[in-house]
Image (cartoon, rainbow, N blue to C red; front, side, top):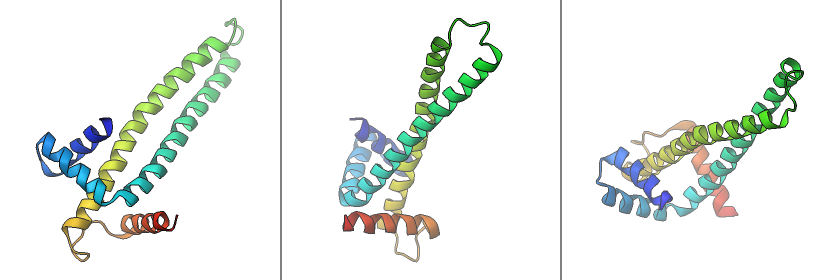
Length: 143
């Protein structure tokens, strides 16, 4: 349901459709481009997981060094503050990556809609984006 809602909201933002019509349009748009969208979804999910891990680990490491250097004599242990840092860093990373993931899906749907609506000479997506999506599609077909 979350997948359907997210894509319906994107279609509503692009075209201004009602929610139900946007959900139907988004479903069929994804269905027509299932290989391309699944390839980008796998890659983007991997990037988002790496981002969450990196942000959490980097924040915890920085917090550890700060606590150890400045507050080690005042604290009985570093585990409780570090667990709080891990929790807050992960929640923050999750929120930022959710926005980033929504941007990825929005750009992908705009790109696919642009391809379906316009001829190659009239498309808005040019250069690197078109080249990257084409390479991803070729790699997905070969796999």
